Image (cartoon, rainbow, N blue to C red; front, side, top):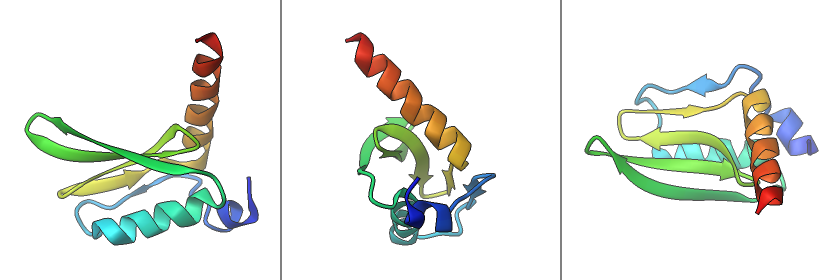
Length: 90
């Protein structure tokens, strides 16, 4: 984990419940990612627009107008490892 990531670590994750602007959410996620690649994809689920965020191709959090969440560091690292394992299969 990079120094920037350790400094901004979220051991238990973080829920925002509609109290954070998308740009502020993205700033927190970028600080958590440190020097690792961050990407996003949009989707609509049950009529609601969601933006899913990834760090090093592992799902790291989700933002929607009514709430947002950034996963715990452990969960993010597990998602990154899972993505790497799946990529190795193809």
